[in-house]
Image 1 (cartoon, rainbow, N blue to C red):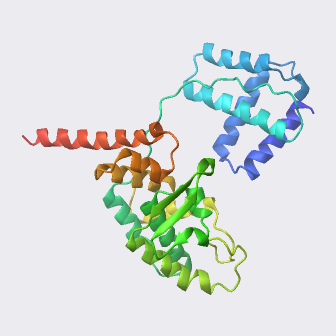
Image 2: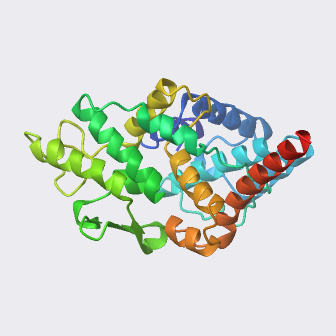
Image 3: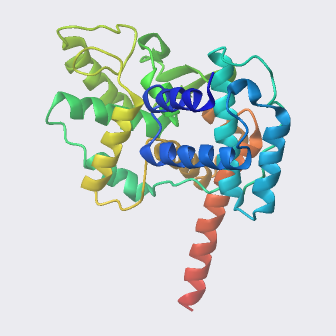
Length: 295
């Protein structure tokens, strides 16, 4: 297939299937132009080779680009080729050993306990959407679920009597997470007064549905979280995962064992959980400095 045609198909996939942002799509267009700049003789997907990919990676390094830019370009290139493989446009396996440059991990954005309270208080119980969204925010904060796990939560996974949610997370690893009574109260309010009274339920197995009876989307929840944060006067750039980050951070601040937090979050590697210790250490240092400033 002609290389530009293949790229256009990949862009369509990124926009409508992966739902990437306009900024990312623009970046990918620039990355593709840069790739063709280095290799102008590539006209067809069959012309792609591992040497081209390796040389492209090397050229990014000697151009003294930031590690973030290099990572994005390699991510684009890998994603593009994986798409070509999945569409059976190419058959050669040439990307397995391409290494990503190591980039420092950014500390996740989280809310303070006071900000969480403001966010929850900003959600009124004045209509069906608000009642559902309040329940979703409550459950996500009190359980630390991933947004994908929250939106895909099924009725059979919720044990109301024992206040337990059972989740099948990444790697099909099952974990059980307690629900605080306050959050359970809003979940039952939504189930009894909104969900079970919908005229039509299309996706019957799921807990959180839109008013058409279909499974709620992550994109919709993202928009709603941003809206409520603005209503609450929270200036941080938050997203649904900020509630998961807040859950982990607040547990550690209250002295929870790191291994327990790892289990609740469903992390395979303890190092992934340890990033939250940096957040709590940062807070401790700030409070320590504030104490000595008063002396």
